[in-house]
Amino acid sequence: MSEVKQRGRRRASSPVTHELASLPGSRRAAIAAERISSPSNISVAQLLRAGVASGAGQKVGVAMAATGLVLAVTLPSTQAIDTQHIETATAASVEAEPAVTAGAEIPIAFAAPEVGSALNPDGRLKETLKVNASDVAPQAAKGTLGAPLENLVPSSPFGGRISPITGQVDEQHTGQDFAIASGTDVLAAAGGTVTFSGWHQYGGGNRVVVDHGNGLSTSYNHMSSNSVKVGDKVERGDVVGLSGSTGASTGPHLHFEVIVNDETVDPLGWL
Image (cartoon, rainbow, N blue to C red; front, side, top):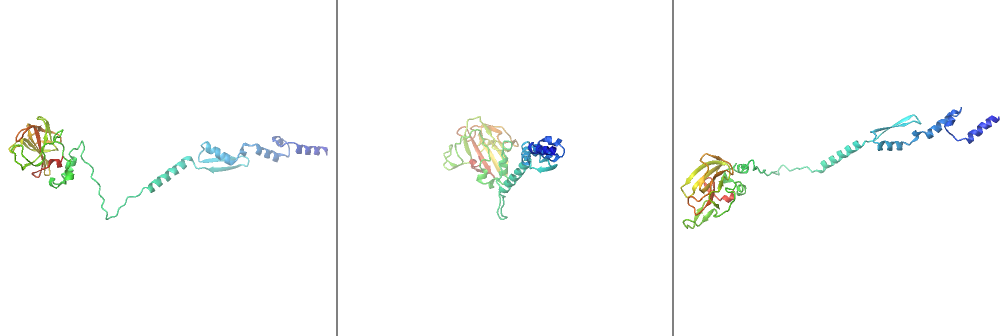
């Protein structure tokens, strides 16, 4: 009798510890004590936060040792989130860009690119001369020919003037004069074929004519000497002669002509 009471007092006054596991009949209390002190008692939320912070994979397995259950929690990875964000941003930008549409009755035209370049200096002129030179609009002709001298100093213009030689008041000046010292290189204004090289009997002195095709030619007059002969192929900027004052001339200069279908026109409209 006294032994039983003693055991009862021990149970009531002693704290619950792991030592209870060694006493017969107290296994349930021992298991409860193990659950309280076990690391597995950490909350699921704490495990999830630890898994994300440590860079765990998409699936974090949480073992519940106390209950013998396994809880598999699937978390979206950082890569998946970034990909989704990028795809959403891309789709938004595509949707934001307006589509270009036009009615069937509305004509759409595109400006032709500049075809002239250092490798193809006559490109623009060739494009312009796809029609006859007489049909080229002034705005299309402007700037298609190169300068016949490195430095252009205009003197007597194209058109009516008083002749510096005869004094005639209504003389038709058929070209544009440029003041230049004798012996200066005279340059082909564009590529073409030399159709005349020699003495001009109507006052042009030493004269060269270059045919550029489709009704357009240029002539170079009063030169001290010619550097090309009939049939020669020249490129833009090639030397065709040296400036001078031969023929009907009052001093060294270059008389430059632009000829469209055998009619002289104002060279400044093409330079």
